[in-house]
Amino acid sequence: MINGREAPVPGDARVSLLDFLREHLELHGTKKGCNQGACGACTVLVDGERVLSCLALAVQYEGREVTTIEGLGTDGGLHPLQQAFIDHDGFQCGYCTPGQICSAVGMIEELRRGVPSYVTDDLAVTDLGFGHDELRERMSGNLCRCGAYNGIVDAITDVYGEHGT
Amino acid sequence: MIELTYSRAADVDDAVRTAADGRGRYLGGGTNLVDLMRETVETPSALVDVTGLSREIAPTAGGGLMIGAAARNTAVAEHEAVRSGYPMLARAIVAGASAQIRNMATVGGNLLQRTRCTYFYDTDGSRCNKRNPGEGCDAIEGFNRMHAILGASSACVATHPSDMCVALAALDAVVHLRSLSGERTVDLCDLHRLPDDRPDVETVLEPGELITAVTLPAPNPAERSTYRKVRDRSSYAFALVSVAAAVELDGDVVAGARLALGGVAPKPWRARRAEEALRGRPATEATFLRAADAELADARPLAGNAFKVELARRTLVAVLGHLTEGGRP
Image 1 (tube, each protein chain N blue to C red):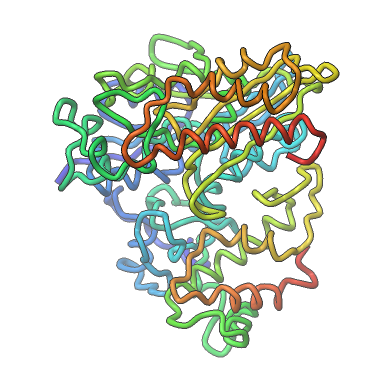
Image 2: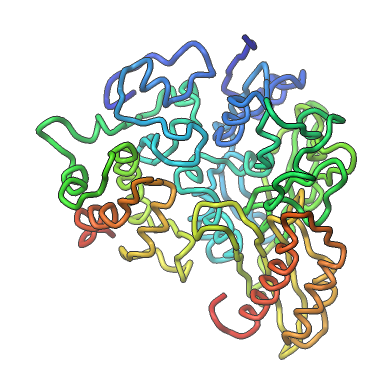
């Protein structure tokens, strides 16, 4: 299932989830950056968890619910994060943005669940709060070569800051 | 085109039967294998998906913990029993890769991930004894800043990239294996081989043998432990040096220590010489320095990574200092 629609998996096991989305289903919102798991541009949500579609084989995800940027917002009906990225200049060229937004949606669920990060001081605490350092560490898998990080952090904080956890 | 089949293993028996001919590869999260296949470093004819096998995390009869090989890295790091009983392991996991990759990667796959030596991946332009035994190693005279200072050979100087394995080495983890010939266990510290003249043979696994679980002995409540990673940027980078350490004090004396180093060797490096140098000695910086020097006495740095010897020494001393001073590690 891709964005709530049935999609038959490719016959060739080599096809990555990323290429399946872009080349087979013509969902071009998900971007191919490094194609080797180093940049995060291809981040999508699978059953609500963020993953890298470039390192995922499409055939492995049969029966799972995949959500791409096209499934989060529509023309005239932007996801709150999309609007916040516009409001806070959370991008310049925009290439990493779909991955940043899908990643942030997955990130906030991890934070609510209490998943620790490298900067979590006390592993016994699961009510982690929405700190600047936590946010930056948790989003470190998404690179932005334009360097719009401050705007990205502001956008995510704008949407989730008060109700983040 | 290379033929490639894909199947989902229904259970462990099904998995080892399907992969018994040795030409297939077990597929976990794919975070390393997919990349290796794309670069044609790996060219399996069959993928046997084992992500549907046990991902259970459960206490063992002896007060330890069993972690199913299909458990995702995130699931291990967030598990209450890991956070409370094995904080070093939780910290090592969240020090590795990115959240997206940790959501995909399995424990079994993490153990069997291959080096990130760039010459190993450069199938078109570089010689590599790990890819093509006997053809030579371009890293030894090349850019070797990230490479090994301990345990390497004249054939290969690549490092093992895992953070999780470094903690598992210090925690005396046991790896459970299954093949058509039955079950067996191997200590994590004995799972990976040193390269010697066969860097292509990285573990003691037999062809077709499957990792089914990792078990940890009961935690020692008297130990303080942590994992510290030093890298080129503050997040999402492989280790230059990492230290997994657990220390038990008896007054001002080190009653015992379990130490392992990452980023410096072809395998997770259990630092037994340093442990021996600490045992029964006063918990002072002089002791810690002696222990670090004992471990690093055999270090053989390359042209580009001599800094790692001093970095490993200082990181080890700093971690031991934190663990024995009562401050937060």
